[in-house]
Image: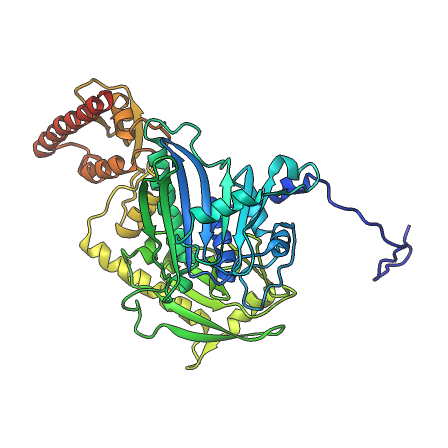
Length: 508
């Protein structure tokens, strides 16, 4: 028993304890999202001086087989490749590198694929390749050496697209996200959804790079047997501060916060114009969650929104966005980045200092937040005068749609309008349950509306949204007038005909 507290813990030597092979499994279980994992690979391309990066989805007919990220950067020789494939390997990051921990390539890749192959060539060396196969990695960190002839063929395959004299290819096989069975249009639906989300993610987090001349990211889909390229999209920058006119003429403003451990730090505070329909404002999640701090590390966005324990997320601060370029903080005393570069942990030293932050005119950071709230509330008040109040959307409506309705329309104090699928007569597309505040949709037509996909609680958001807008009067009046009843009959007839047409198309 320790009789007196000791501030230093005494030791009696040391012992080397190398990691178990299962460490690779732990490394690949860090919760990397698909888009964040691809962005980590693109970071490596930027660090290598690439001007062109291609994200290549490869399919064999209806089946997706591999995903490849290829760049025209400076490439790696065999020694550099060994370091890059070593867990925690230090590549000699310079002070402006996007890489940090030496784990991104491995953990990002093996989070989503059974194997990751890297083939690279410099101006002065022949192509070389290495592969991590998860089952080998777990057995003792065994990394495969790629046969030189295959490495050369792989480089030749991407010659000019974009590899020139040098470049690097990262290939994922056994990608866990890919549909197991590609038939019935599953592959096309997956690609449509995934390419769109990936483009938005890369466009947002790398927008400063994409906004420069001479740097491009392309997302491509190609059939490996026929060579047919199904799609080729250039990723556009998505600047979270890219509004045409500020929501308040007094902003943006630069506030300076004194952080004792780091010194003065600039906060560029913006107020978005209310009810903006621009992708830069609305395209990447609920706008209330995208309010807050936008932290950049070496021009790479590493956090998109959130108040880092300074404030709770609040709808009336939805227009407030603050850009912060992180200073060098190698020990992470004030700012600590997550390995996935999707968030920043800010110490109480930073959040506590915010109360004293001021701009050149003496305005406080707290006053900026009050201005952002005022602009939001005034806009809501004006919208309330012009727009008729609606019944709140409830269970069965997609959360993103509910969010949009709550932002755009003043709501009544009625119980929320719910949506439920149920067996109904074939000549009915829907029924109105005024007492239960429920809109019933005919289960018979559900598969047609979903295109064969499995149903979920919040499925068919487009149809439900249109029905929600159509049926407001039916749920705001105890009795339906003759005109509304006639409209409902009209809508029933048209919607049933449309649903049956969809069923016929499915049967062909």
